[in-house]
Length: 206
Image 1: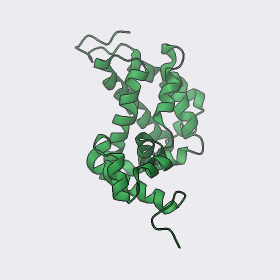
Image 2: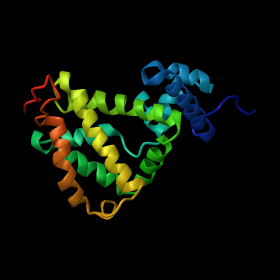
Image 3: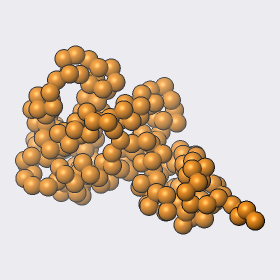
């Protein structure tokens, strides 16, 4: 007899989980959505969600069709000298976006324009996958860290829009080394440098 229910390996199962996850994350946010509730909505056992995606973070990134896990970029930037964080982060970002995975990133950015659901999800993406991870991983001051990372993220999103979505020349075809040399120091300043008038009107120090 044919077994009832969906089996691991069935692409319909994965898509059902993703559809349920998209709805849950959009309606309840990352924190409010649980693996158990998503599994129930998809009509599967919670263990099957872990089978396909491994963790809640990985499931969320899959719903976003993210070209990379931001934790990988943050970890790479955090390795080595603190004075090289900005350059390392920008370089790692560009290497990914200039490669085959970049197409998914372009689609992600395009989807956020004029789409309320995509905008909500992208905001959750920045908060849960970048801000929460970057502040402790980069050793930033808790009182200043989230604002610093937000400044850096705004720089990266703006650069990605101009280079990969709008394709403004000569930025769109500039070599990675040139972009890193120009933007790396700015990201570094946002993350670790003095920002006069930003924190208590006295600068951040460092």
